[in-house]
Length: 374
Image (cartoon, rainbow, N blue to C red):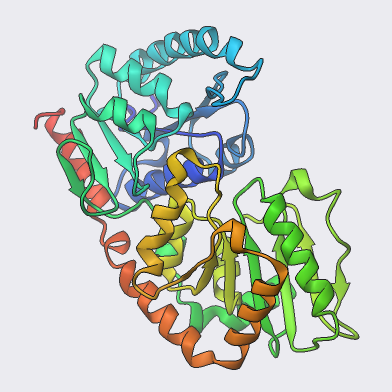
């Protein structure tokens, strides 16, 4: 039996901030009735997609492409030749798959397949979920069949407000109904205030240090549990775990792919300000302290975080202000005022209404059906 013709190629990779949204779009297409084998993911040969793409079950192609470093790096010498080879490989792939649409979720990993789509006149959709769009999104939006954005007032041409790509399991999550089961699954106590620290697939050394110092200072607290995802690259240097027998419970792991469980189990999260994280916090209605990565291009994570903080749906603390005294003070405040947490969670969930709407997949399906006609 012949394999079904590819319906969509979804492309973007390098970090979980691009891979997870790409897979979320793939999942949404399947939920809309597309055969899973007719959705093809294209990412890079490095980064978290090497783990997530095979596990997803979708047909996938990983290209040898690297990002352009903003500071001087020997990796930049490989940028152009690798990009050229990857784009030619992507052209051959699209000629073979003949997709009805290509969906670009941004990042350097999305460039080859999207550029190939442009050259081959395959209609493509640019999905921009940062408040301030990235370079690839800006470049590709000019000739896109459609541009989907997560925030009002986008500078991209012909932008349509659709919300951000969020995984179906996140959209369906009821934090209150699944809290007990989530804590059991993660080995967390039911009777403690749980703080989950999650700063992307690679972690954040600066945030990790502050959290470790706070755990040390709060070591005698027997009403507190901290679930700390430090990033695989930081695991060897991480502080030791604490079993909670005589004080704080402190769990340290390198990577966590069970995010619905973590969102349900946590009373409070500490995160970076990546667009995917912001969208997920809003979708599930999870209160958070957001510490934007200060080296993000154009400091765009601050803009992302403000989407929630300006509505009272999260607390924005810039990294320069994120020290152990500040973190301990905020934890004490939240633990002593659960009503404040509840208000923040409610406002976050209200902010996530568009992400749960299904508007993004409807736009992609419209482009696929119309052959790119605007």
